[in-house]
Length: 106
Image 1 (cartoon, rainbow, N blue to C red):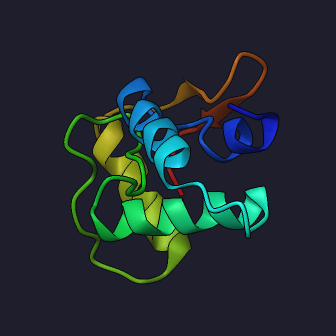
Image 2 (cartoon, rainbow, N blue to C red):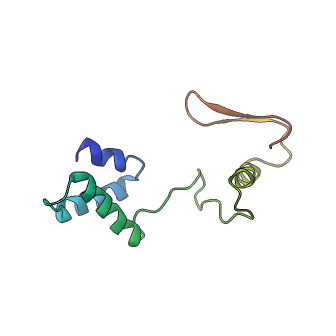
Image 3 (cartoon, rainbow, N blue to C red):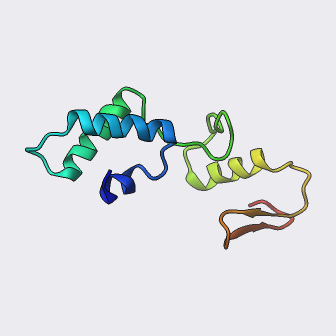
């Protein structure tokens, strides 16, 4: 596919990317721009539940949250991932970035 479609699907699993590529090849509308075709196909995939959001490193996701506040939700994520008895730890975010947590996780 093109660099543009690769940019939109770079975080897709290989299975979802294959579905997108097939739909893109089969359903491409030459009267629309490439970007419009990509967005239309992604929207169709979302409606069919083929392109939903990802999870944060857990097989079954993190479930629901007790708050709508992003800061508090992030604290819930930290508490679910890290044992509550941990006094301090470092979580790798990427090759060059780590999240250092001290005695308090907030």
